[in-house]
Image (cartoon, rainbow, N blue to C red; front, side, top):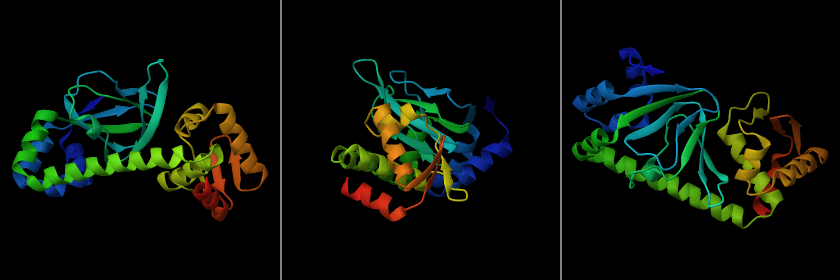
Length: 230
């Protein structure tokens, strides 16, 4: 569903981290051309191989980023949440080189790529911000790959539990995973069976409490040590 109310567009602009880098006139231009789309859990936001015509960022909610390998298997790469660009790593291409689905209800914003290019030309600080944001996302992904490639399953699962603890909302010590066990296993680069076995061991040893998708860390010291030692 597209939303075109002026009040909502102003709210988006005020919430967006990069608004301070745009001049007054360009803020108004941005506001007039924004499109807002609401997605339900599981809906496709964009698909690998389709034309890339817009800058896209998530205003609210959680989404997953994934690609399909040569065997036709979907590989989960990372998650994104509110106030993060979703397609910076594809902007050098004319087509998306990965896909994205909503993991929760999500509010997603679109601005045409040509307009954003014009805004960058007229607002150098804005261009520098986007460059830094793209670099930050690239470095973050690279660190994740390097870290997890040097760890055993126990270390990778512990690392992801710490990631979710900082990434998700924590209530009364618990956070609720937006992922299925299969998706969690993909992110940990292991099988679903190995993931379930590792989580069960953590629970048995009292390191975590686990109830369906709800997790509570009972010993931050042990989880951090398992993640660090791998």
